Image (cartoon, rainbow, N blue to C red; front, side, top):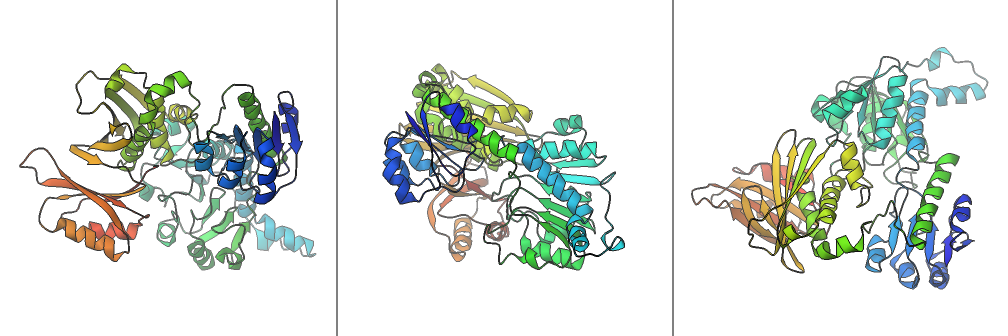
Length: 530
């Protein structure tokens, strides 16, 4: 067997793999160059420089695994790899310490004016009073996102004598208070409290422009902001204005909306205290070695006939368990995705019930699929392997049952999602082997084809509702693929829901317009993996 390693990956990876395969270290290559040679190799290991396209994957006739020495896999065509049965792995934990430490380093550098003071001193000046900073001691650090990186940042902040305030809908109050922090249930109650705010969340429809002129206006005067997560979570133009006006006392930014092309970034023109670094969160010798070792060990394991610990695209489950329920995996994931996106609050319990033919089977793979759907809608890097671990770490209870109650479907899986605010019930089934449907949303019996983009519109059942909603969507230039309107079984019931399949993402402006229609109640945009 042969393994190709490229993109200047630490040579320790080769020493791990060489016991089971020949390892070739080559420089970064173009698509055409890789296509010519990839057919010789059983595994490919890359960093971010190599774009592993569908063309390369198609040419990799012997490929069994592709490893990304890092967290993100945006440079790998996951769909093409999955279709060919090629496992794609990454290293989700390898840079946790590096990113956490960089966050703390930036916060300290900003607070103590390190960068401008260093520049001034190198110019032969002695401007001590000009660069007077502020202490972190007894200040409040607000952390948005309390995963591996966010919680470690909080741990260091507590050691520095800071107070820690946490907002994370996927973390319970008990977890945060046991840690030593203060839990905030709603973002609106969060903004005005911290002296420093750091974000550790993925870039999703919910977090894009999370920090903008409106949320900044709710913050303390003189607040300081840190972003080592993803560009776009903080609106760069709004941050520039806030720094220039003095509302925001300082900012430390490692990630950008259009990196690496930052020539037009508004933050380059800030007149106030701002520290900018070129996405260095994972750039330590140790982190680069850790991710190389992690991925190399997974490649070695897979080539030796074992399973990967951090498979991104293929569940690390025994074939004998997966085979009987494999047709239900996607609808199970969609059911979890839909349930959590219709819910508010922190997830406490997920009750999963299988009936019909599924009641006679081991539904463990479906439980993992539901968890992946629930968690990946809000968190980055969730896959079939780590979903159960993440759920356990966040204190989410999983209750799985199999019901003997007769169903109208060959097999149906029902997800009851309980948060600290409400309970949401969604059920998915297969009409036939290859026709998935969402068959229940709370009290509504439905038959909805899962699509990538959907709008759910609860409303009072009265004339012209469909027309009014459709008009808003049409005026925004959004195409409606299909619409399903469902009323509760009670013939006297006056409430209904519309489920509208559309062909693109919708923003809050569309939902706000729909909300203004008399009789509409809290419409939501839902994005599914299909």
